[in-house]
Amino acid sequence: MGKENPYILAIESSCDETSAAVLHGRKSLSNIIASQKVHEKYGGVVPELASRAHQANIVPVVHQALEAAGVEMKQLDAVAFTQGPGLTGSLLVGTAFAKSMSLALNIPLIAVNHMQAHVLAHFIADNDEQTFPSFPFLCLTVSGGHTQIVRVDMPLTMSVIGETIDDAAGEAFDKAAKVLGLPYPGGPEVDKLARTGNALRFSFPHPQVPGFDYSFSGLKTSLLYLLRDIRFETAKADNSLLADICASYQKTIVDYLLVKFKGASVKLGITQLCLAGGVSANSELRNRFTAMCSSEKCDGFIPPFAYCTDNAAMIGIAAYFKFMAGDFASLHFTPKAKMEF
Ligand code: KG4
Ligand code: ZN
Image (cartoon, rainbow, N blue to C red):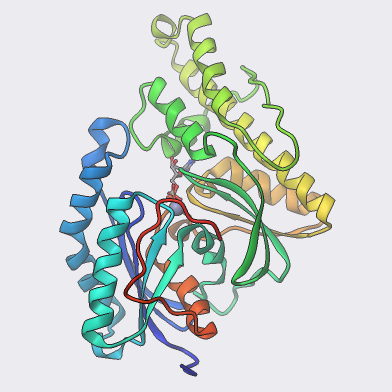
């Protein structure tokens, strides 16, 4: 295409957030996110309800993104969408919408891998003082569906060197919140309660998994045993109990995430370290990661909150790199529930 600062409309619809953003080069001009409240009463995302909500949201969300950016459809140089991984029905809404826009406006279509986009969120340029990771770097991507240590050699050249063999870190937060009677999504609730709790009151074992892989499913079981042993249902009148459980449980997750991440950094000799994904909004993970980077003499990068949880600006930045590389999609592209890099 040869254009240095393309205008790209990006659409994210992989799970329960309908989001659209407009980027000018690497700068995000707008990033509109419609969260779906419909799932709250079920304590988790209901796929069929998610796709229906995406259908209702997508037109107004795209409209708002263009309006907030002050960009007209005819100025767009490309339209990007999340191809996967995610819920098939949800992905289908964004995919079909992006394809129709590409066809109607006669502009290229760009397919983005959601997990690659979480990593590349670090390159969204919002202000002049910003610093960016240099290559190669390691990214700990922690979300509701994934936990990965990714080695990034170039914007579009990355490989997973370790990942969870069962539940994701976000799932460990959400499942704990559910058994503790907290609302969905539980991660932010556990984070909030943990701030006033004693993290040393309870201890949970670290799962033993070789290499840089993780396992989180046993942690939830340990929590269930603890709740049974302390007779949680009757003991929870003790105000500090819930906060102490949240703080102890959160500390275990953060310790475990960072001990492995640090091990990967030491073993590979890579000192540029990044966090990404919804769980990187967690206050303890952010603080402890920053402290670890300074004690290990590494450069640490954490995205602003708006780019941690699912958002279309991160799809836009990944699309920017693909646009520059001339990597376009065809109208035959279909959503992929599972998708490798
Ligand atoms: O990246 P994301 O928005 O969606 C996926 O791609 O999965 O991540 C969502 C996950 C949820 O599990 C949510 O509970 C978790 O991120 N999360 C948090 C916090 N904010 C969001 N977990 C712990 N502490 C938080 N502050
Ligand atoms: Zn995500």
